[in-house]
Image 1 (tube, protein in one colour):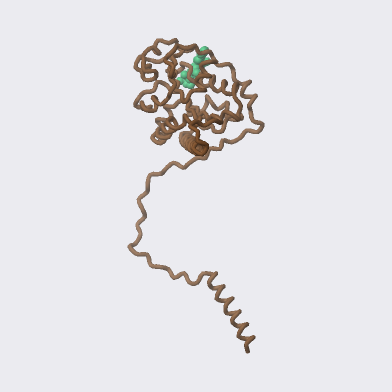
Image 2 (cartoon, rainbow, N blue to C red):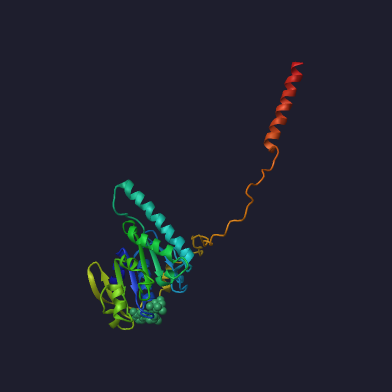
Length: 279
Ligand SMILES: Nc1ncnc2c1ncn2[C@@H]1O[C@H](COP(=O)(O)OP(=O)(O)OP(=O)(O)O)[C@@H](O)[C@H]1O
Ligand SMILES: [Mg+2]
């Protein structure tokens, strides 16, 4: 579908709308389109699924490098993406080119707001913003869905860094403006239509229901399910007060180390031999 192909080619896309407006339907449509048009050699997926249900069906397909529902793992996935972007920048620098040509990485997030209210929200915001800014030239894309992006939860700079934005049905003109800068998405039907903002302007688009995806999933299913490679990083504990130590700790006499003792013993034996020989 043309809309989905446009989103796949775009740097970053935000999909927003009220509950039941079809955000997950659109994400499924985009993933289906990637799995139809591309191969695992040309497109990789990092799936972040705080709701735990919507994207899990894809996690054992050959396209997926990462799948998590956990905000801590999400942070590790964003770190991995940043490391890859930086590696690609080095390649570009060595080759003297300004845009990376190679495998596209799509970081797909269903319910961005859930990440923004997680304990890791500050770090996630910072890293997401960085990826939005530097990912573009490195073929790393963010496609995120969220309920109306309340500015206190999803800051304006994050929203504005999404080059493309699809507003599904919104509850108010204010919400519509937060996504596509103008009101109108509040007048959309419950689902099936959206207002799509891209560098070409705003247009109204029809959104079909995504077909059942079991066929595409079974086509790309891995023979043996693979575990996600993401490593969990420990949650930072609040710093504990240091233990009380006495002002000066007396040095313990540790005696000779075994290596030194062995060396002295060997030297004594050799000296003994030489002495005996001389006599
Ligand atoms: N374009 C569409 N055509 C027909 N039915 C649709 C369409 N989009 C969504 N639906 C139906 O509407 C229901 C809600 O869709 P979906 O789960 O995608 O919404 P959502 O915005 O992700 O909701 P939530 O905020 O609860 O996650 C689903 O049952 C889906 O089948
Ligand atoms: Mg949903």
